[in-house]
Length: 485
Image (tube, rainbow, N blue to C red):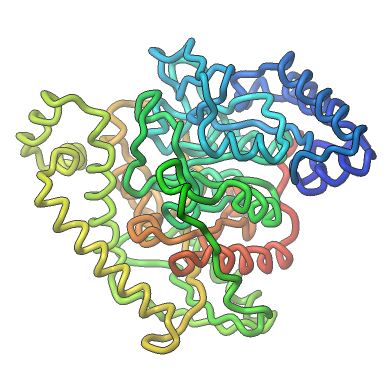
């Protein structure tokens, strides 16, 4: 049993622990040994508290012997992205000024998984303050993609994704304001779910500074894993009211919109002139659509939600940079507002420093797009699609590039050199409009790197995107394992 524990899903491992096929302590030791032996060149798990984890695993085994099962993840060892506060365990968010920070309470998603019985044994790497498409920082260095060490596993949940891909953990908590669950899932070939905005409390994540009680516009926390079943479990455990709404607010997500794949109406948006997609990525997404047709689903390659990708990307960029403005002091904001440079960096600065009246205009435009999405998904007033499939990114995993500022970097895809932040365009339609999006791998590109597809669903339609993701996973099989792991 211990020889293959590291490839078990969290659901399978929980079942094995509860039926006493393996103990929590045995599972923990398996992961600790594997990280120590294999993580060196990857650098995904950057903090480990083995003594505490061993105590918690032993306590879980003793409780089980008494017939006390603490929750669906009883005794399951796992890691957590280093932006989420973990009580008594160092949490740095990759920032030198927080290199010795030890929180006194858990972030909300961490607390909920602990309540479900999880044993948190380590933290995974990320960019400083979760603010890049790659995962590196001055505290812990660079995390590499296990499929190709010259590439990044993505950001900001890059350490989370790499650890999952390598079999160092069965489950992770990611965060996503601009694609930080979706990008790493795509780049490493694992699965991830960006929940509907607001259904998973994220209090206790850094940024903002430790102790911040507000939650940023667009930002969500959500599960990452190697199976869609684990995504559904993680979402169920982490979702619910936040600290402010807990006295009265309840969440009851609607069931999946269909019970059979043959009943699903699926739109596919595989390419766009605003952000052209590499041929391999486009071919794999359209190949996934073909597989769905063969399985009986209804596919439309031309349907769009009533707005252009260009419009969605512009509004998303404005809202995103405004949401990140809290990380800058007032003097810096004033300098940004005065910047008239006609460059990508200049645009980012001006959006970061926008006036509230400009934000109100961008927000109204966002709400107009949300209405278009409603019509797109509503069979009574629109075309009644259940989900839309589209790229996560226009290319495969990014090569390492740590030049600053990141907004001045350049990437190449579809035969073009493009500004670095153009790569996030495909995260805009779901991100700007608070929609759920699930990512699953649909094959390997000619460069040997995995490609994921983004499954976008209606507001609060998380169970629908997860259901379609489960069907795709059944078609394409298990997530790809990196060579040597």
